[in-house]
Image (cartoon, rainbow, N blue to C red; front, side, top):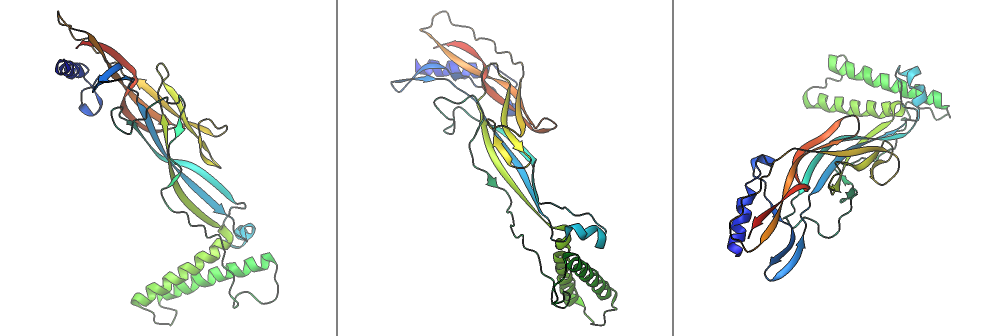
Length: 303
């Protein structure tokens, strides 16, 4: 009887064509199923996983930011700020037959299944260089006077670099020595520029969320993005929602003919194919086709 039942399941699994990645849809038993003398209640469910990568941009203003336009002709940030934006996202699903598929009661709302995972390191050095003694006098100066000295140091460095490149410096620096000297001058210039323009740090963080689709429901809030706090759970207030829309494709699954004599029937659940789209309200972040058993069709086959 088990051999006949298995054959019926295999035959039924090829009834639905037009599947994910070119494979036939497979029906899974649903209801009370006997296995090795034990009876269990089986209810195949698809769990959708969405991984969102956000970028954190931290800006720390320079101590001479308000003098940057006067002495350098550029506008610099006048306040510290942190901002978050979505860089990328992916959608996948957990096969109900795999060991990774969760069991028991599953929530109807999206839940985070991983803590924030740094994709790139964040350098947290927020210190600023001090003016050397040959630039800043030992006499106490006002912030604007110190900003003027820092600007003078920047222009002096640029002049020296131009002389080295043109050969007018007189030091006769060539080859690797010239490259090293130019690299050091670039580092010094950057440190002085940071006194005006501040420092910027960028880090990317990934987080994974799970959504359990419910029959008849095709849109879900996966998480929320706060421009100042990063990714938040869907249940939290505030932030821009990142939503998952599941558009079901019409797949006809005809019932197999029943033999004239059969002992009993078993029910197989075939998934529906849905196109999942993850968006933040203004643009699509990711999309894929996936089987969703909660939107599927039940077919009775003879044992």
